[in-house]
Amino acid sequence: MMKKIVVVGSSNTDLIIKVSEIPRPGETLLGGEFMTFPGGKGANQAVAAARAGGDVIFIASVGNDAYGEEAIKGYRLDNINTEDIKVCKGVPSGIAMITISAKGENAITVASGANAELRPADLEEAEEAFLEADYMLIQLETPLETVQKAVELCAEFNTLVILNPAPAADLSDEILKRVSILTPNETEAERLTGISVGDEPGAAAAADALHKRGIPTVIITMGAAGAWLSDRATGTRIMVPGFKVEVMDSTAAGDTFNGQLAVALSEGMKLEDAILTAHGAAALSVQKLGAQSSIPRREETNSFLKEKRK
Image (tube, rainbow, N blue to C red):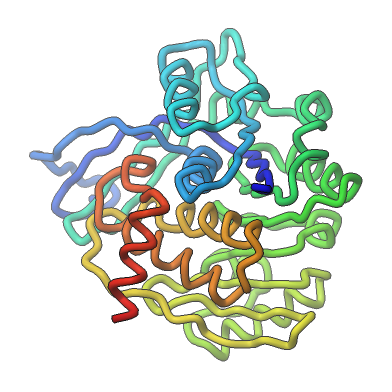
């Protein structure tokens, strides 16, 4: 029986301008190409999990506007359960302004809009989703009080928590002690620990510091180099290599990784194998433009991994 995954997080529309390079403060660049794509870290991860084969419930908040309406339509096309998405009157849906360079680097500015209206009370109304789910995947583009409530509900219903602490923020021990798996990138790991994470020794030291704050499993993503896995239960401390590919747009790489990781673990895959599969999905995503438009389906990821094993 397929295990359920509840995703709590943001829903945005990405307004993208592709330019030769990221502009410096005060600089104006002409000749950019403009596009609109669905996005938001929570939504991206929900879509990634659904396309990986997961049975996904998405809890989010959108505005009563065209952006929110189109977002929900898109989630339904990916067979995501949208019953617990809150629609706010008089509040615009979340918007992200994304500038992408020719090298695939990006700079992102977010207007949270309705995402800021996702409240603890909304999660209480949706508590059946937590009861049904085996895993919850959550990020930090909604209020921290809501994140706090989400992990408390997971503790109540024995739902395992995967927290992707993005965008980088300071988190209380009250939140972290209820997390089963933490998946920061180098910047986010440094924000939480004060330890520079630029190589394996740095990642190992940061993971140890996070274990001391009560987190059993730490996975620090480090781009194409891979991810540092530190699992307190088994004593595993290794770098799981990633895949080097040509990067067009890295916007959804981390979200794709997390969504695929949640599904792989829910299906009983071992941690190292789940991370490798997540690397494959993320590598495919960076080769296409946009967030959700770049997220691969299960068969695409399987084909990519099969080819890499030859």
